[in-house]
Image (cartoon, rainbow, N blue to C red; front, side, top):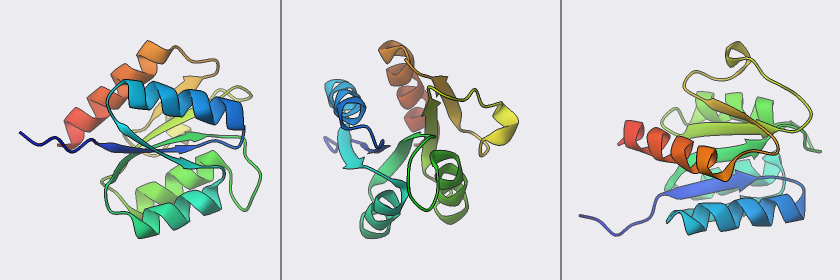
Amino acid sequence: MSDVKAAVLVVEDEALIRMAAVDLIEGAGYEAVEASNADEAIRILELRTDIRVVFTDVDMPGTMDGLKLAHFVRDRWPPIRIVVASGMQILAESQLPPGSRFFRKPYDDNSIISALSELLDAAS
């Protein structure tokens, strides 16, 4: 069995929320990689082939929001799983890329960990 941790890219413009998400993901035994906006996230995805999940906020400044980022990731890197969160919007499943999960902020930590585990199990 491999000791390699699955890498999760956290895309969140609010530093305190991003740090809390990173702590949550690392506490669950995954590697957390941080990006503060979609452009930074795409640069990271272009450089790293080990990202298995993108966990993104919807409302972010920059050239695209988290929902557009989710669709971009699905089109360009189909194997990557996606978790979308928002405190401002409630998204229907039809608005998300296929196989993605949506969580309303403030989200329940256990629900996020459970979703990551399910998505990563389904991917392997």
